[in-house]
Each structure stands twice: as structure tokens, then as C-alpha cells.
Length: 169
Image (tube, rainbow, N blue to C red; front, side, top):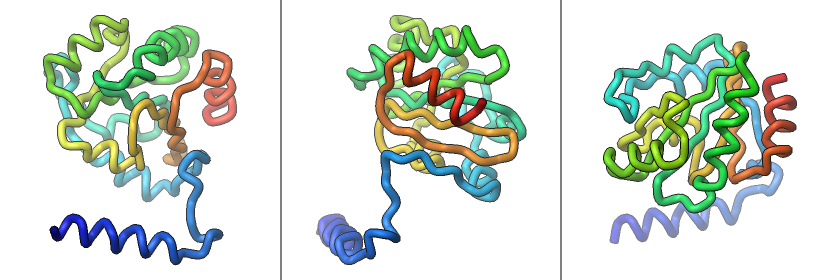
């Protein structure tokens, strides 16, 4: 009951907001360095059980691909992300797996060629939330100056290349 009341309040609050104050969820938006610093304050494990610290992404150029084993669009997106990683040696590519059981995530990784990338497991959705990710597939472009852009949805190979050039080029 409390959840339902909170949801109604949230919807009513958003409905009364000035359209200029409301962010377009589909539009990439660079966040301040302070925000990226908070987003990078996480510790997790990879699908292989190795420790990973979000701080290691500071001052790097990186592409984070948020995926889930239950995401149909992620199946078609996976080979495009892996191919882009092969073409861009100057960018660190990472998968961020969530919304699944560890064995299922590892199986998805192996089946779809994602074992070429480090894949970080976001067991509780906190990393996803830190970057403003609502659903997979979503790309987050992290720049060395500490800013990032979150771009939801799948892309064609051409669109992905254009986004990489625009966001990280």
C-alpha cells in the first residue's frame, strides 16, 4: 500500500512539473565531475568473480554497456559492442550486467561473445542507478574529465560509431 501511495505521489509530482524543468530521458546529458565521482564510488565483482573498483574508471575514456540476460535487444547489441571494442583500442569497454542470476549472466556472456570484455555484476542495481540507467541496453560514455553521458536503447553499428565519435571523440 505504501509503495502504491509513493508511486502515485511521484507521478502527480512529475505531472505538475514545468516541462522546461523535466529532462528528456532519451537525450544524452553530460553530468558534472562531482556526479561521476559519486557514480564511480562502487565495488563489485566481475562475472568471473574478480574484484572491480569503480574508481579505476576515473580519468579514463570508457564505454559502459549495461545489459541483462533477459534483454532481447541485448542479444543483437552484444556483437556490435564487442566489435566496437575491437576497433577502439583507445577506449576501455566494460559490460555492466544486472537483473539476473550469476550463472545466467555468465552463460549470456559466453553465448554472445561478451567474454572479450570485463563484465561487472551489479547485483543490487546500485551502479545502474548511479549512472541513471533505467533499462538495458544502455550505453554510458565516460570521459577523462569526469563527465559522462547516458544513452538508453539499442543502436545499429553505424549509430554506435557515430555516438562514440560524438561522445568520446
